[in-house]
Structure formats: structure tokens, C-alpha cells
Length: 337
Image 1 (tube, rainbow, N blue to C red):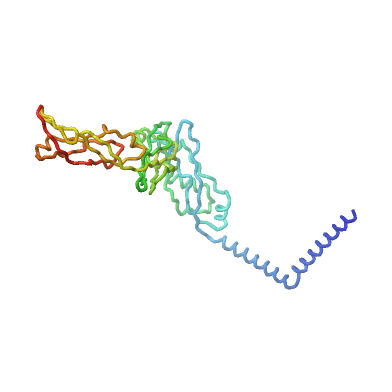
Image 2 (image 1 turned 90 degrees about the vertical axis):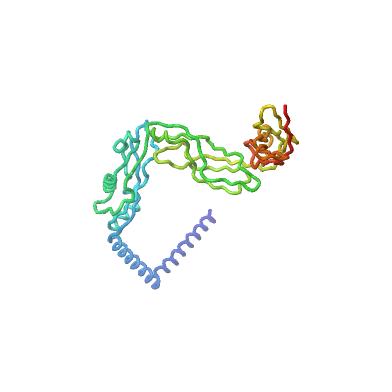
């Protein structure tokens, strides 16, 4: 018990000692002059601030806007701007209260007052907008400019439909690759608008997207491009780009004679020819010879008599590119039946 009391006394003694040292330092003759200097510096700064705030200035204010009293059966496809920017002139004291307090209340746009049911559009005219702003400002404040000339908004009474999505932009694969598939999640979106606008929209586009040298599967979340007076649900979609490796392949295709007169038969040597093409490795198993058609046209033989006939690739598989014949001419024989 005695030891604890002794320790407390030592601590208190040290605190008192430190207090006296600080007091003596602050109130010494040198530091007393410094404190006086600080006092008058603060006083002069206060006077300067008061004089500055008494001057007239111009300042841009951001006033919030909200659309109120929207009926339950109405879908707002495009709301009015959420902020109006206005430049005002007044004393510094007043402008400070605008900038650093919540003195300016938001502009409340009443739906029924400005909505036109026939057009599905509402608009707050400039005169009403100016009046709404003035009501939220001090009587001494003068409005010098308003950036918004009106506050339009669009709506409909639940009319909607689903439309597919189209990609805006380009996606370039790396060398020896190609884009085998593009998939959207969801595959279509619901759009809300007035009937005339709904009938005119067949699909919606994404924002412009550019990808280069794609060599693996790529996933992106992309906003849909806005359309005035249209609400899209969802407004952001996920896109998947799937790539495949390109390979050189070939299939053997029978040669078919066309435009032959009755009683005549054309035989070619050989009777089949290889068709070379470029195809994605995963698609090659779907490529069949019957998807191609190689022909000899009897009219070509009549127009250009020769020991060899010209081959033409008349049809090819939709899964291949750069399809071409390994042989462009072959021997032939025309027989009478």
C-alpha cells in the first residue's frame, strides 16, 4: 500500500513539474510577444474575411431535382435531370450559406402538373423552372444564368416488349483465331416506351466496344446505348466472346454435271475433287462433303471447247471460309446414252 502511494506521488510531482515548465515557456517575455502577434494576426485575418464576404460575387450552384407523385401504373422511361446548374450573384455571406449548408431545398417536379398522356412526355418550361429556383433563393440573390432551358421526362402506362441485343463496335481475333460465337446474358431485354416508339424499335445496341488480338474467351459487362424516351431492363448486359483456332482442312466432293442435254452423259476423270478450306477446329467435325457442290457446266464446254473442262465451286458449308478447289480443270468424256 505504501509503495503504491509513493508511486502516485512521484507521478503527480512530475506532472506538476511539466506544467510549470510549459507555463513558464509560454509566458516568458519572448513568447508573450509571440502570442500577442498571433492574436493581432488572427484579428486582422477576421476583419479581412468579413470585408471579403461583404463583397458581391458570382457562383454556380447545383440544385437537386426530383420527380414526385408518379402514379403506380406509370413507368418513367427517362426521368428529368437530377440536378440543375444555376449561376447567381450575391454577397459572399449569402453564397457561403448556399455552398456549405443545406439551405437550398430540392426542386420538386409534380408529375400530374407537367405530364402529357397523349405524347408520353412531360416538360417543365423555362419560366416555371426559373420560378422554382427563385423560390429557393434569398430575395437578395440575382439569377444570372440557368444551364437547363427545360426539364423534360418521358413515361408510358406499362407498355413494353422484348427485343434482341446487337453489338456495336468490333472484336478482332488474334492471328490464326476467329470469333466462333458471341453470347449475350440475357439474350434480350425488356423496353418500355409509348406505342409509336415501341413499334419502331426492332433491337437495341450496346455501347461501342473495341477488342483487339483476342485469343481466349473474353467476358465483358457493357451498358446498352440509351434511347430518348425508352427505359431498358436491364440497362447493362454481359457479353461472352468465344474464340477457336483456325485450321486448314479438305474434303473430297463428287463432280456434278449441269445443263446437260437429253441423251448425253458427262464423265470426269477423276470423278471427285478435293475442296480445301479454313475452319475452326471445333467445327470441322460438322463439315460434310454433301455441304459442298462442285459442278461442270455443259454450257462452258460449248463456249470454250477444250480437252479439259472447268470446275466451279457452286456451294460450300456455312462453317468454312476461303473454300477453294484443289484442281480447277479435269479431263472429261461426253457419252451418248
